[in-house]
Length: 399
Image (cartoon, rainbow, N blue to C red; front, side):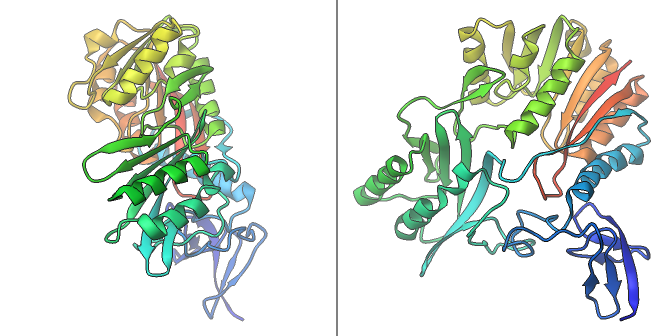
């Protein structure tokens, strides 16, 4: 069969790209595209471990071997920096989380005539893949699906889909079901039986007017740098324990000599509690539940963490405020934090750790810092969302 092209790289959305620029789904570098549109697999093409791969939108890259998967994560970050002409001082080893390590996930569910389906959506579709197996979820999360499927088959909302948030906490799996009507005593009792029978740490539901905890036999917590912190329903947690450990370790090392640090978009205190081992920390966060959890845990542990309830999008820390600190850490949402970064650029700060879940917005913000005299000293790509095109990073800027 005549060769029509050879795959040389993986594009940002997971397709292989040939030498002449054609995109080929499900391919790996070294594969050969034949004239009839089929692929002859090369040395970097792996056998996808999951039966749902190719239809389920949860993974895009199971066809890559470990070396190529790591290279993909690295290139996403490096290419973003190069696209903004940001020079990289030291490129650190890329961290990729292992299979079955995701400790939080949002799945989708739908009640059907045959019962109920639960899983990720099909790529570029609203159709839900009813998961019979999953190689990214922590086993404790996946273990909840049969009981949830059985419950939703009888008591799930008859109209519209439902979202299921699963998070592995210190007490077990916390589950929040959105768009669940749960009308009548029978449905309520069934929900409580689900929680008890599945050993859930918490069962919360959203009936359309806010999340309400139905079952929580003891306060749900997550341990951050050795400290138990209350975990609110819908709270944010790094996707994997090993990924969190990598990001926190870098941040603690890079800011370890700073006597005072501003932790911006601090959340529950993922970084603040680690930094407090050596520094006084200002932990600024807009979400009230997360702010209160951080504040309470810090006070209980008598840590030098001052929790500040502040919306950094509407009211970023100003240069005069930032100048009180020897270093800062910023971990914004996917959109980045242009206004706050501009204030950092205008301040006298000489050391900034920027953690990001979006290389594109990070690179845009990095350009602002570079123009203000910072240089990118260290950069670590991180792939917590294994086999996904979603990539994260930790970076150190100095001036």
